Length: 454
Image (tube, rainbow, N blue to C red):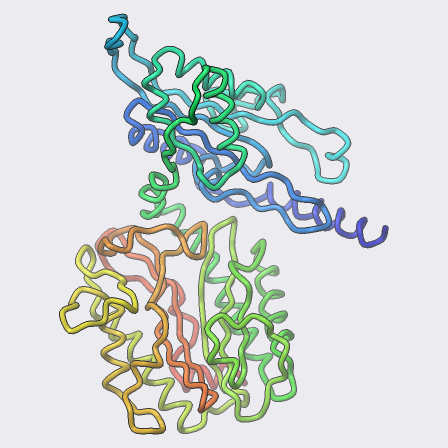
């Protein structure tokens, strides 16, 4: 019972905190909904928020696309966005189907007054000033969604071919099936994944979004500094991670952006090592890949440190090669021309990816213990998009351009030497096309890292 009460209290505290998030301006959310509607070409999109989980199992976090379009954290809510469409003529009946205007509706579930004793008060469609509070043109009970969908399609059944929803969300799929059943349709509506449209919108960050990512990065950098100071032989990896988490929370972050990675010795060579249970030994190198979310927006930072406050000669040699690869990628960046690339695009014919630039640098600097080049130890792609998700959706076939936020994180991982080195920063491309390092104040030169540990 005590464990359950503790879980309830934690969730209540989290729910209160979730409603105190910083936010982009409310008008920006509506601009995003209008932008999505323009991509629908007269069709409709249905998006559901995440449901509230079992209290003692996990914390609640809103679906990224639902939050991107609404700024709302209410669990179990849904929205309908209808794109404006022209008047048409039904081909078989010859009847005129009048034009329809843009429409946006937020659907809120009925309140559960008993549950709210534990989780805090929620909005519903009958709450005072609910439209002003949410910023939506219309707010309805969630139970009205199937009828609204069915009415929209009944006006012109061809509209059923142009429905978009989250293919991975059971409530969204269920709502579409119910609407089809209500219309006597034998088969489900054609599956159009709305996330393919929201990806296009989310790829370019607004100034307000970049400001939130900057705050997440500043808090993450403060955590990394705390982690550096916590490293010493005899300390567990998990205690170092905990020092970082405390710094994140102190600076207003809600949670880590991803499972923290603190890998010492041979664990530094495992890319997504997350057990964090080993004890740091003298002579180890320690990789810390740990960052936080600020008001739902993520950052991603990695630093590599010696277990004592000095790199060995070999550790420093490899470190400087990885750092050189990161700097080479930074210098090669040209907005609108360079792509991130990946491990499958490292052939001689590739000339437009930052990954290839970093790989070539690593492969032509330094050797392994057998005299071979180091390129084969660079096991992963150079970076990824960052936003509401630490791996935010992005079309990697396209070049990086203004408003994009992404990481540059070269690394080498040599198990036989028990040395893994990764250095990662989060960047954005400003309105002039310049590459801006959001974590430029976090030490990365070997001497500066050593000094930060003291």
